Image 1 (cartoon, helix red, strand yellow):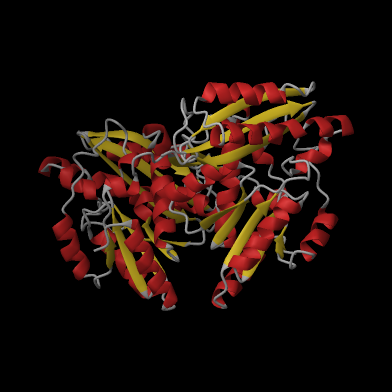
Image 2 (tube, each protein chain N blue to C red):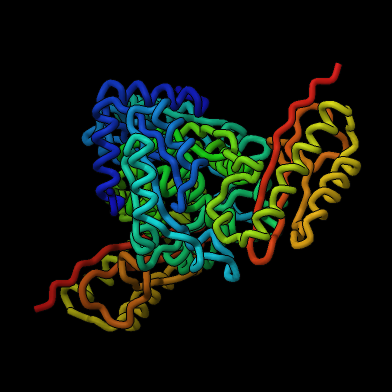
Length: 283
Length: 283
């Protein structure tokens, strides 16, 4: 287990000197099958896989769950042993943000809508730490889950705008048997809450059916259907239902080619997000 | 001559595949002996030298000299031929900032005083473009002149805070025979103005004498001496005379070990800066 950036750089240089490509899987720990699928993808693409585990304070808002966020490190390390025993980087907060640290990376545009409205400081925290992880690890490829769709857009934009020499690989959302997108935050849910959350993914497959099978193209009709479905769960409060272009994240008024539907909702104090990417082929 | 980031990355990968270390000299063109000394330093340390020539709009304030800034590209290329013919990267503005570009890197602390007061958007422009150049070129070392002392502090801080895998090398200020620090902006000066500018470097060597020979330790005494010297030039208006710690740029009240004296002044519409680094060994 690597604890410092200096050790990390030594490790990375050794991999590169041995002509090995480094695949980075940045995580906040509390690993689930979604994370493990990213590790497997990295193992397949790269000769050296690195998993970082760092609960990044900079990406949590003041009233968010930073202190409460689960940190089951021993269990995480055990899970990673079952996933090919990648190298693991687990820095202390003071290693990533030493005294006097005063840098931030801001990406405009795709950071502004949706999550940006509800979590105004979130993406600056994400881009800053992800850039640090990219540069400290000198990763050749980095693996992210589609579950955090907007985050992936933001990171892709950062990579492009700052000319970062890393290739971003996006892996499909891994879901529970009933469809709930896997998330470290799912463990906050009570049994009653957990049973209600199924409407989130169901609302998205319902929307997909409307678009693909029923050829509905009007976004308000689709949004209303998603809303009605989610509102069948008594304790879920919707933050947003966004129907947008997958690259720019501009909201659409009518669906023509590619579309992403992003939803965010709270149940109790737990905030959940999900999304679906849909390609429309009209003749 | 390399014109695009894509070509640049191909060139860099070729150098690294051939086990050559890349030394980057970022410039805005209008090259003088100061720049050429950086190229020579890069030639000595690295197997592959890259000079970038890019007048970066993002680091100019709205009322500054972006449009007026000299762009004698042919002469620059000729000068570089006399300095070992390094590879040259000359991107268009749209190559560095394509439509939709929306990223910025902000460094706090050392960006705030001195130049930061007079040029509030300057350092964000510098750090963003320098990070892009570092990452696009995958430079192993990068060479800067001590003339831009605060810029060097800012870039060192960025490299540290963002874990950028590049080593910063700082080369001494190159001066005209009368002591004026070489600068592309010196060519703006009329003959009368040019003859007055000698007081800038003279005021710094005067301060050095006070500190080293006369062992004066009170900064206000030193600052007053510098001010009086500069004010002998009728057309020079002082922006600041700062006596500070060379790492933190905190202003000192008394001089103990290391000190940097930074001055900025305007003559007509031309703004000039200079500095001197002094090590005090008291017993």
